Length: 98
Image (cartoon, rainbow, N blue to C red; front, top):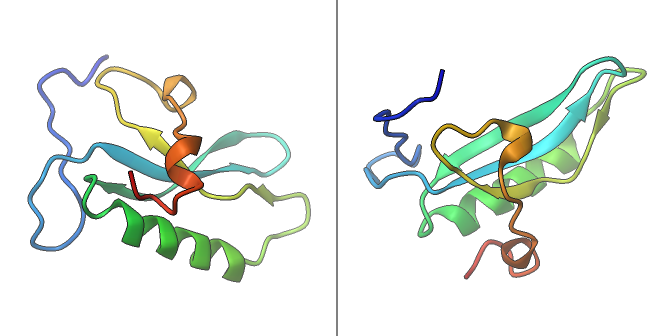
């Protein structure tokens, strides 16, 4: 069921803006594949969350058979599933800065 009317806010404490982006990496255990979410955030907070996700990814230890891609930036869209979200590689190359 689509989440029409459901507002997602930036998870930065005290921000209060609507989340525009999902910072996530493709994860798999060899059977299931999904996006591992690092953050849901607004444009202003995106660079900090993207940098933190990259640091966390570098520190991640994986179990045998697990894979974890590099963090990516995805545009949040109402009613869209993870696999339908548009990846913003143009923002990734700039460290999350527009």
